[in-house]
Image 1 (spheres, rainbow, N blue to C red):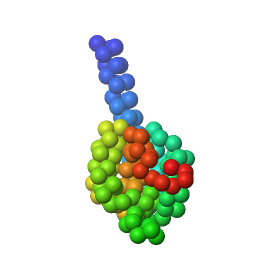
Image 2 (image 1 turned 45 degrees about the vertical axis):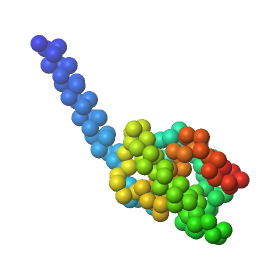
Image 3 (image 1 turned 90 degrees about the vertical axis):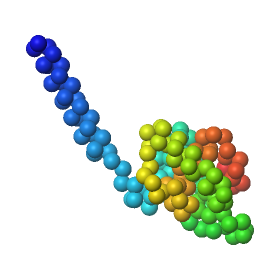
Image 4 (image 1 turned 90 degrees about the horizontal axis):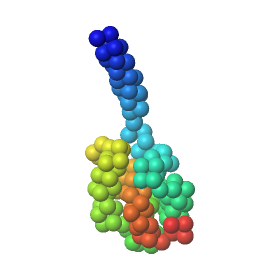
Amino acid sequence: MKVAVTLLTVYLFLLTIATATARDQRVDWASLNQNFHQSLRLAASTFRVSYQWLHACAHSEGGHGFIYSNSGSGAFGPFQFIRSTFYGNVGAAFQRAAARGTAIPIGYERWDSYLGQSFTAAYMFSIGESYEWTGAAC
């Protein structure tokens, strides 16, 4: 009986620590969405692709800003997504991220979101679709 009580006490203690740790590691999604580099780092680690590769591609495509393409293609954002390419992949990207433990709240799957752009690009790189970009570093 004493061993069972001791094991229960240890279990409850570990559960308390795990709960407190999870609570302390909550993500401030709004702040993260304002920081391209942090969004990109999280996306790269979630999809296990090179942050440096993604960063270089974004730099050669859109220069890390929310700019429209000067070519008249309608491309937009740090990864210069065409609207149809972005919206054709963002749902799968967010679902795959959630399956890997990064559940991004609803509302960030937008074309004009750093999280949306970063996670969609990282997802596409992870499934071998880096050929969608024409930038020198992609």
